[in-house]
Length: 393
Image (cartoon, rainbow, N blue to C red; front, side, top):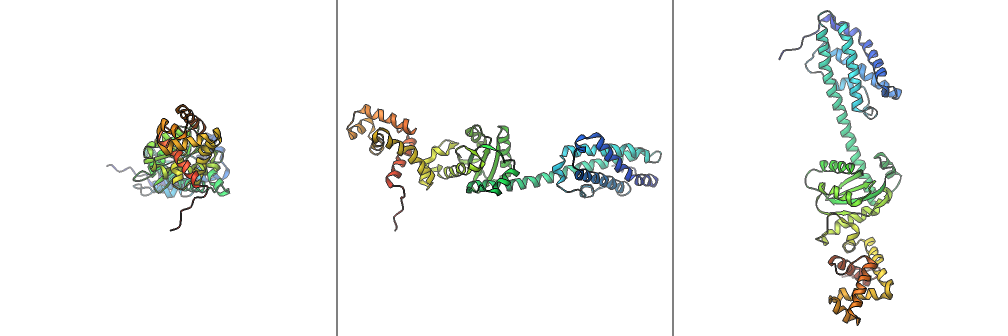
């Protein structure tokens, strides 16, 4: 490989004397070419000017010395705070680099002694390539740091939602994540896939964005808790997230109006995820409300109360208690229409009529195995009374 030509001492001296003028010219050109640069805060413009001057100074040192391995990251971008990456995007930074390089390339040819203009331009191009790579590295590091910080914030917000800690701290963290005014929230809980989870979390976020939702994700041991915001169809969200989660239950909590009411949805979904193995043929995803009986078996008191409100109370109130009596006879006897009719001393058509009434009053069809199991557990818990305790040994 042919080594690049070295500039003469006269060219290096002339360029070095013009360093300050090159920096000032670069800043003037940035202000002329980029309206967004003129709209920056004075402090940010000052930092950008320092970066430009540092880049030109670093180039001059490299231009007159060892050109084999220019270490530009610390020299050029070390003068500005990392927070500057939040004010100026990578695309804008590259625009500024193009402007500075164009100014240096334009002026350096006039500073070089005759016959060395091409050598000086080649040096600018080689150095500008290194600066561009250094800029990309700075922004990549900043993005990684922001990603890690956002992931920690997400976990803190999700944990606060589950515990029901809707305080100012949670509100501040949620606002930092862009969730200050998010409505229409639903929680999806699935199993953690084997292996690394970083890729999975990214896929979940991208999937939610594709369907127009926001998402908070936290991996909590064997389960993944996903809080969706701006959700028009909660079941569609759960189905979209399904391919990225591990095998096992996938449970959808009830929809709630906003993040500060999401604790109810999260706790229902987590309880359903824990209890779902009791229903081996549960669909995936399955609403947490379809797992009320299974959740009641693992001690979920809201689920037990919901069984009473949705099943026992409507049956007791309808038909003077005849529907409750018919449901108990049907489930306890297992005798079908004819046998239940004999047990109740009524006509079989009366039993059929009452079965239809039970479905209308509760939404549960006693001829469906899982619905029948749910009503059976609801009646069993009702018989135990409001506070059932395990007998001491």
